[in-house]
Image (cartoon, rainbow, N blue to C red):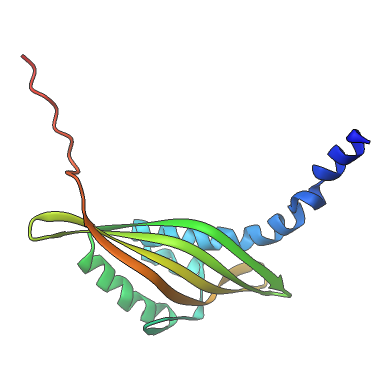
Length: 163
């Protein structure tokens, strides 16, 4: 009896392997978004966004060109960003994925000579679409839950002088 329970408990269906495999396409695109934004490799946006991409939530951005307006602001305002992707949940219905991505986005900058970080708690409502062999964003809705700005410790470690 224990062997049967163990086999059922650790079977691929019980572990959700089918769901994991299906959603891995969506997760790959979601993680690529964070990497592209944080590395500022905006020339790669077309690898994760369809030409008819839109983003909403406090603003409306149409197409990659519209999205680049926001990225130009990001580059001129923040020295760096770091998007931490938390929970990703969603489902496919045919070639359309609808889901939510939980994220803490850190934005580092200097103000009045002080290093600061603005963290944003975000839930993205994502819509991705498979066209042919590729999966890319069609729409992303930005939902800001909270925001906090704080001072950062010195980013350069100072070594003690040797005697």
